Length: 90
Image (cartoon, rainbow, N blue to C red; front, side, top):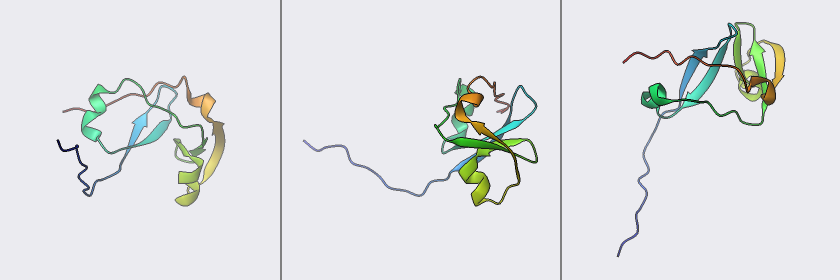
């Protein structure tokens, strides 16, 4: 009997800017954007997050790596009750 194996192949990490109920946007990353319509929640890592000058909430690491201007820092717990609108049409 053979065990199941793994197939390695190139993939993509897609970044998607989603509007929130507070007038800001959250940047998420996914390898499966075609499944976004079935999402009911977004998980938040226990990291520091920031708001950039264009109302975009991203991880602090992402903002620093991409030289984005930071205007406010968030603890991950501050983001727990923000509603994100999934706005994809298929």
